Length: 297
Image (cartoon, rainbow, N blue to C red; front, side, top):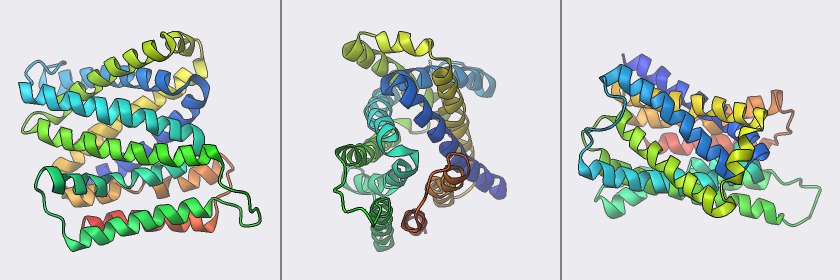
């Protein structure tokens, strides 16, 4: 069973990689808010079916009050705030570099757990955090053409900051999740987070664009198709596989295998999108993933 759990964790990393490419494409067509809203709508539908099949309860009606409070906060921070930054980063610097910044999320979560939950941090974990940061810096610097001495563009700077803020948001959301989930069913807990995310993005879309973006997105068939496909691989299959992996094998192994996305995304970037990837970018991705592995030793 442990081997099956490890395969599930590796499958999760593949799902995150595939979903990030779909969402990058969709965001460039229909915008950040529309993609996030419909992504979560699709995911909620999938989770309702999965909840009915796995525990005979399509909706989390049996969730305790603390679960609703803290998982709702997690949905607002981890999905709404974090994903607005995440998808804007996809649009500006691309999914490949953005995923590298997301590799910061596990170390940041550990640091927040140390500060607010009283969890301990080992010296080796600090070394791992340093490696992740070093890998990201190397990959970011490696994107620049050494023959061109132009300054970093404003869009690139914005993209890096958005990716960093997304990683921070995911970490804060994870702390709320850990505080609220307790012994409650993880799949149903995810439903609460996704439901609050749907409401949050609906409100954001109405406030920002009076919902016009949501109506326009429905008329963009390629954008909606990419969003639908991303929802299947990300918030649905990816979440289910990650939960199964955690149940079957060591959490450190799971986290390490799931952190492979920055490396897994390099081959399709080269083969499918014909993008040029420099040596330092590949080296930075490998170092960042190695840092994640050290962190969980």
